[in-house]
Length: 74
Image (tube, rainbow, N blue to C red; front, side, top):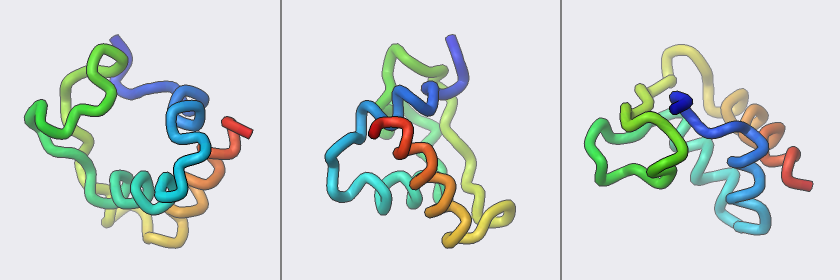
């Protein structure tokens, strides 16, 4: 099973959701919980949580990245 979902699958899942950019930017910056309570890709991705990325990327660049990923759903 892949570590995370494909970008096109992310774009498809969040297409039309008004809060998608903010929500996914927060996930990129803050990561996800290591337990199963934060799993919204169950069965599509490995069970490990995503570590926070605030050291590697700033919020503006994270928003650009998420916006680009969401563009695959247009």
